Length: 575
Image (cartoon, rainbow, N blue to C red; front, side, top):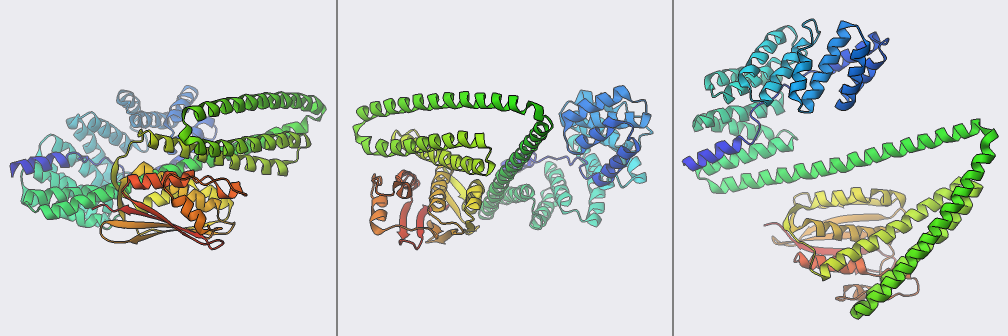
C-alpha cells in the first residue's frame, strides 16, 4: 500500500504544482500599449518595442528598448521600457537581469501590479518560496483595486503553491479553497482542472487519500469537457494511479490506455502545427522574395540610361553560368556512367534494377538539360509566362528524380539489413492527415480532391517511419496516374480484432491484369515498355511490399483499365 502511495505522489509531482499568473487580461494591457504608441508618437522606437513585445520577439524587444532608454527622458516611457526588458529577460530565463530591470520600475507605473507578478514568478522559478509569498501578497492587495489586470483567484493559486512547497499545508489549503470559490464562479474550465489536481496533490502528500481522490475524480470528469490534450492526459494518468492504489488494476489499465491516447493525440497535433507553421513561414518568405523582385524591376525602370550596361553584364553572367552548369552536368553524367558500369560488374544480380533506374535518371537529367537550354533562350526574350512553365516543369522533373532516389536508398537499406524497425502503436487517421499535408501542393496542382475517410479509432502496431514511406509512395502513385479533377480516397476496414485494411482508392488510368501480376510478383520490377514514363519502374511498389511484409502485413491491388485502382494494405492493429 505504501509503495503505491509513494509512487502516486512522485508521479503527481511530475505535473507542475504551481499555476503561474497566466490569466492576465492581456487585451486590456495590449490595448493600453497601442494607445500609448499613439500618445508617444514622438518616440519612434516605442511603437517598435511594444509591437515586438506583443509578438513575443524578446531579442528585438531588448535591442530597441535599450535604444529608447538611451534617447528618452520621459519617466512613463522609461517605466514601460524597464518592464518590457524585465519580462523579456524572465522569458529567456535570465532571472538576475530580469530582477534588476523590474526593480527599476517606479511605483507610479500604471500596471505596477505586473511587477509583483513577474518578481513572484521569478522567485518561484528560483525556489525562493518565502520571497514569492511576499510578492504575491503585495499583488493581492493591488488586485483588489485593479481586477482587470490579474484575477485574484490566480494570485490565491500561486500563494497556495508557494505554501505547499514550504510544507505549510494549512495555509496552502486555505488559499487553494479561496481560489476554488472564485474560480467556480468564473467557470474557467482549464484553470479549475489544474486547481483540482493541485488540491488532490496537497492531500496525497499528507496521505489523506479520502480527501484527495474526489478531487482527482472531479479533475478527470471536467477534463472530458475540454479540448486540452495535456490536461486530459494528466487527469487520466492520475486516475490510473488512484485505481492502482485501490488495487483495481483493470480500471487502472483503461485509464493508462486513455492517457497514452491523449499523449499520442498531443504529439500528432504538435507535428501538424509544426508543419502548418513551417508552410506559413515558407509562404511569407516567398511573398518577401516577390516584393524584392518588384522593387528591383521598379529601380530598373527608373534607370533606363544604364539598361544596356546591365543587360550586357547579365547576359555575360548568364552565358558563363550556363557554360559552367553544362560542363558540370557533362562531368556528372560521365561520373554516373562510370559508377554504373562498375556497379554492374560487382553486382550482376541487380543488372535489371540499375538498368531501369539509370534510364530514368538519364531521362530526368536530359529533360533538365533541354529545359535549361529553353530557359536560357527564354530569359533573353523575357517571356515570363513561358519562364514560369519551364520552372514548374523543372520542379516536376526534380521531384520525380528525388522520389526515385529516395526509394532506391530505402530499398538498398532493406537489402543490406541496415534499416531499423521499431514497432509501436500509431494513430492511423493522424498519419494519413500528415501525408495529406505533405502532398497538398501536388494535389492542388492537379485539382485532385482528397478524402480521408479513415476511422479515427484505429491504432496500428507498426514501425512509424516505414508506414509513412509506404503511404507516401502509394499516394504519389495515385496522384501521378490520376487525371486532373480526379479523386483520391483513403478508407479503412476492420477485418477482425487483429488486422485492419487501409484502402487507397483513385480514379486514375488503372492497370491491366498482366501489369498487376508483374507488380505483385516477388522481387520483380516492371520491364520498360512502349510508354515507359506512364508505366514506371515499379521500384516504389516493391519497396512498399517489403516494408509491409516487415510489419507483418499484406498487400493486394484491384484495378481495371480506365476505371481507377484500389491499393489494399492489411496491417496488424494494436492489441
